[in-house]
Length: 406
Image 1 (spheres, rainbow, N blue to C red):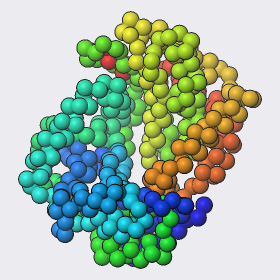
Image 2 (spheres, rainbow, N blue to C red):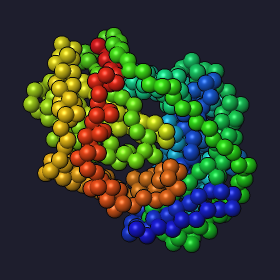
Image 3 (cartoon, rainbow, N blue to C red):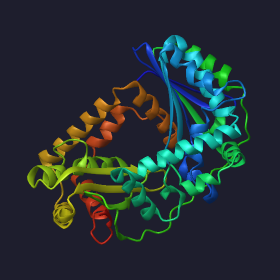
């Protein structure tokens, strides 16, 4: 993998991966998300991401929204529980325009008062649209119960109540804490001269300075299993079974990702999809997700079904999970599981935007870039004992929690 990495004097880290494409993907990943919010700031990370498009000390909102689109490029952003990312896709001749825009948006925003009030209405609509989609909202509600009152359990969007009290000052305080060069990674993938990339990065990002700071994450309280049923007046029941599990830094996190993919990954031949949908015709959607964070993680098993079929689905799932706790996965089956997962990761990584985001996440989390070959090596090193231990630790019915919308 041909990568070029450097750090500016102000602490900003940058990385570029060469590719054969004339299309360049670049993004600024800021190590700040929902879990960095104080209690009175719920929703500020996501709202700040919206407000980055509303003007800087040099550029108007109109300029920001048209700068790259006018040359056929794209500009977008998103917020997670641990990061905020502003990213652009452009032709290589327009890289300078993109980098200048990313720098201004992140480190020179103005947060106009009128735009704040207008954008609140937009986010209120986003929240309400989310509430209309129970198959998505149930994941947020589950993690809120799973992690208790800790910030990692809060929804990314915030609430109407919390956003109504959000002020310009609070947004400025949040960005002053976290929007610093040494707390960000600039990432690029494309056919572009590395020395020119370094020169442009210094030109547009080098002038921003901020004193060092020390981040302190609030760890979630000890886990207590729960079983909650909520009446949502939906046609279909939505159900999640899950548990707390390994963090990104846990030595078993790669094996956990492999295990979750086998249980209910995107392939139609995943174990629980085959069981509930193909064999018994009980559910249209069955999926298993492993969401690892810096210091904790969540394993969720989701399915949607008719309300009268909830118990049968749960009985089948618990019986299948119990089998995994009694006998290890080994031999040809384990090799097939590994090969499928490696193939999925390889195909998914054959995308410049995915590569750009991944290498920034790697630097923020591990301070290194883990190659696909290194990840595949870890996957193939997973043993039957690893899978068996994961099943025992994560699928114990006494520690599994449930949330059901009926």
